[in-house]
Length: 621
Ligand code: B12
Ligand code: SF4
Image 1 (tube, rainbow, N blue to C red):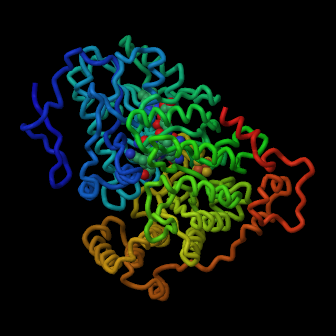
Image 2 (image 1 turned 30 degrees about the horizontal axis):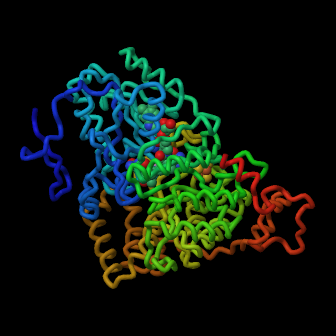
């Protein structure tokens, strides 16, 4: 037996030392578990909210020290008495729940990668990994590491590779099969890293499927497995399972699919389902029972919940159902924090009162504080992730023609600005993603996006803008399209857009006397030291703009940057006036702005009647 301790040194890398607690032993005394489940440490941690994981997905491994200084205890995960993981990503919990339908708990353990040797033994036949983003080749995750110089190793990938290496090194490796699943499994298929990572089979699709159970049965019997298997997504809400254990960040699924049909989107390929309230609540209570204080409902668009397959189109949110669901979540005893995941922006224009009511409910339990922006007495804020993607109507028509429904794609810039106004007025400061380098994108398209971004600035609207380079994701409707491969390929305007977004993001952080100077000096020093070589000449003037060392007006006069022109956009009332007549009946009169003299049809649609019990009841059954 040897003794090993995981420790953190000044650099933030861990050192192995001899004076330590026993944490890795040669073989477990009971011969190990037949099925061992795990996930990369950086995807399992339930620490410091979402931000730390998003940063780990985006920053290169050489910047790990920055996060170590900010979150010195991020590696301190909690364990159950038997050494298994107290929390695991929802994907691990789902495969565990699914297997528990057929196998005994005595045969299964879910553990952190550093505990693998406590559970892998001669009896082990399957090590199953769930991973979100093992190689960092998705939107935003690749782009920042590429800017900083290493396109291959974001912090998360480093830890994912460490986990695969630990599995490969196991002295029992010949006895078990390695099965990988989760939303990042496709990255292994696409890069063909099966041998290097020692993976036998990658599963694409949900754990509930019978085909997955059969696969595990085969592995337990020592039979060969296919390299890749695609399994069916449930079509019915009751087929989707909910774990009875604690998940990382208290993630509980709320919906699958979306319905807006953006060409680049993976989750939209799944059926549009809103999950039953009763099951959501049971999973929330299970999290609390296992010590979680935080809950987050996983969704592509929270606003479709309660309006899926009702007689009202899903893009007119079901206010009563949503308020009822979120009210029960935040009022569950033991839930101290609640974080929003993803949504779309058009619902804020459709139903501003819904946003107001949700703010009243959700702000008190939000762990997010924006001291310089929020008008909440404790400076709390809500920050869901929303796709802005482009300000160019031409590109929007090509890649996301329905993103803003019920409004026309022609009005996309107006929908973004009006939606953001409503959100900001209610202390919602979303993180908004943008795609740079969509296939066929011209300078005119980038200028249109810059027009929109400058207009946000002019109107003092705030969103945390996350530009990322177009990545054709596997299986999407754009999977065969070509994107920008290296940051050196970006044009000066594309760089300007990226740097303008980051400059605007840092506005609230620059209110201190030292903030602006620190940024100027820091960014120019970084450029001089490393970035100008990495990112090429098109990067130079945009970084000077970002630093603030030369004013934007001067840079424009020098012909080095483009300052977005003022946009004349539609007000909410004008947007509503442009709706198809058939859609008007779904708008709520209490929000105002209905066309002058508009008379609702004699038999109102269920969604426009108050309260909206039909749709709510169908979702909460
Ligand atoms: C919550 C969430 C987060 C949270 C929490 C993540 C966590 N560790 O728990 C936060 C905000 C931190 C996050 C971060 C990121 N995320 Co995220 N996230 C989600 C979201 C909304 C839900 C994920 C979830 O838990 N779903 C519920 C579980 C049950 O689903 P699941 O994990 O897919 O598991 C199912 C199947 O995959 C399968 N399965 C899972 N594991 C296994 C294992 C085996 C062996 C088998 C057989 C099957 C199987 O069965 C499960 C169902 O039964 C999804 C969108 C979505 N609706 O899925 C995006 C999503 C997964 N994220 C995405 C991205 C891009 C990211 C980031 C890279 C963003 C960024 N740039 O920062 C980072 C990466 C983080 C990291 N550590 O590397 C993309 C993934 C794209 C991809 N990989 O191709 C998605 C799809 C969003 C999107 N619309 O593009 N994310
Ligand atoms: S709105 Fe978002 S989740 Fe829906 S299809 Fe578009 S990108 Fe996908």
